[in-house]
Image (cartoon, rainbow, N blue to C red; front, side, top):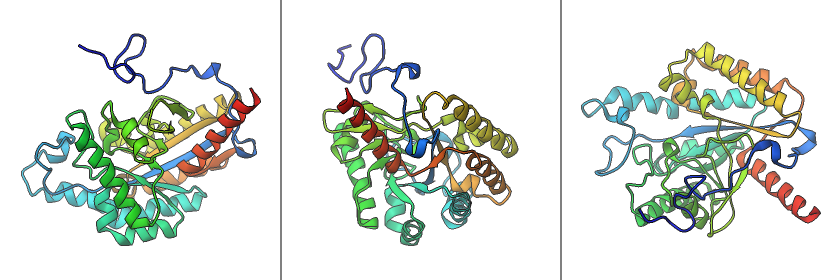
Length: 309
């Protein structure tokens, strides 16, 4: 197999999207005000199409029943109609700004939600076209570029400003995705779940940083895919934070949580999120911020290190 000269497989690591880096070898990361942990909470607003477009890639469980599958589709829509308001209320109560990952279908067809999120001070980032169209290597380069363009333009039209961040539906990417995101003006991506600090990615099209999500604490991954009950999930959130917070005595750490309103926004689950957020925010030295705020600070710290060197 011919190897791509810069971004294809290579010995040592299986891609060239970033340089490998062990966290103990890095310079000390300082957050604003001497905070130990930067907390980012992403809220997903994603639309499930009645029928997946022909040839699209999507998780099999989304369309495992005969169509029309009212149960599955209406369950997902619960997040748009009810759950998101509970989740945003819980975040506001805890003093945590929301970073909302919104797909193109939602941006175009739910103007009330766009206005509500903007009114609550949320940052809105790109989230593909729909949950039914996960980015993958099945797409051609032009198909993927069009997917990114459609998502970015839908957010810009709906909000009046360009989005700076990206979370792919189902974390989906091809080997081209980071470059295409940078080409479209995206400055940070949340698809990579491999770190507890931001890090720069290698793209010839422009500067792009990773804002890693802690995948094990993704509510859908933990409760739907792995079957943890909500009370155990809440303890996982607390324990996960406590572990990161302890390690942050050496250098600033990042905790990025990914939430789905159709799941965590249910009335019997929301109090567990509130309890976990209260536990996190009760600790001194927690900086709750949007994705852009965290990446802006991180990039500024890298520039200062370079100037100092």
